[in-house]
Amino acid sequence: MPVIKPISDLRNKAKELSAICHDSGEPIFITKNGEGDMVLMSLAAYERLQAQLELYRDLDEAEADVRGGDLGAGVQTVRRRLKR
Image 1: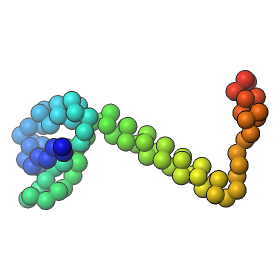
Image 2: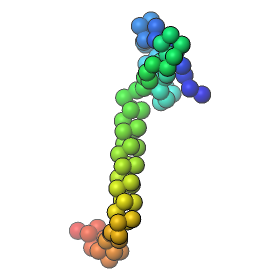
Image 3: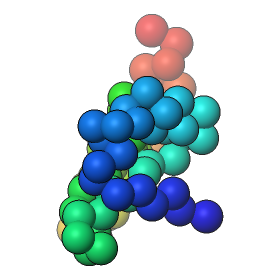
Image 4: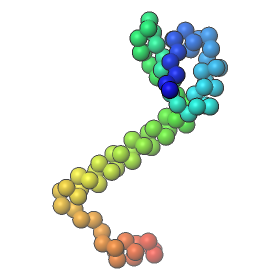
């Protein structure tokens, strides 16, 4: 379940918000005047998200290569490369 907090908590309860971010590993949604305004997350959660996005980009690029006719390296070629 998402954690939603008012923007005033950034000033008044920053330490508590930090603990929630680190303990849950999930982002906190910050509202301003009852509307969504920003997302707060721990550095570890942000780095995981960035790594996931990079993986998705790499997979998309590989799928595009396959659609373009690139068959990649054969099993024997990969085995030789791994032995080096």
